[in-house]
Image (cartoon, rainbow, N blue to C red; front, top):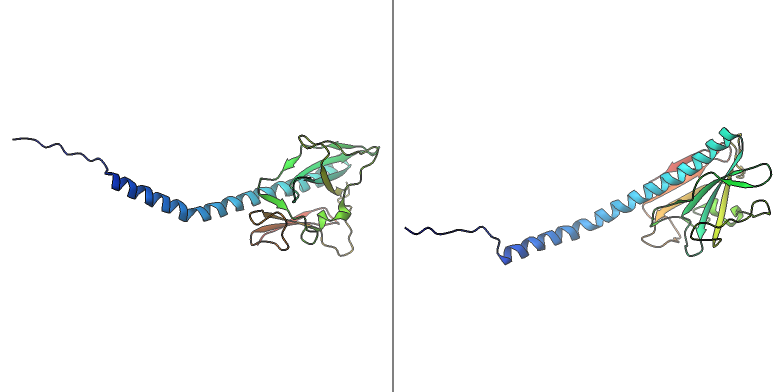
Length: 202
């Protein structure tokens, strides 16, 4: 009696069917994955910004010096994406308290002064002979700067005349400069009396 050999190999049609199913699943799940990644980047950027503001307030109290948080916008960017803290000495010079912190790609602080009053033109940094504009790594002096001062007594240089001081952060899938906030955003508000920051998210 002859024995017949059976094989369990896939046919070409079966392989194509499996590839089609995998492709369809990838296409269907891509929007939710992409949305999750954007949300993660926004959360990371928000936490980085909060950390720098909290650190400035804490350092001001602990070292008994005014701390300055500088927010940078490089000239080839529309949104604000970089922060750095400085200690201000009595002679008017500024000493970096850490490196420049870059927000994740695809997340910006709104350049619109209505959405981010802390980045309005009136908050621009004024350079002096003792505190000149310093070159940043890979950028030089091709950047704009806004600043917030945190004093040792817990106060800030922000006006207390009823103005709310905050930053709005969002992902840039619909552009870097928006007239209104998208559905996924975060807002960080700074109390001018105490220097404390609060987070608001929808």
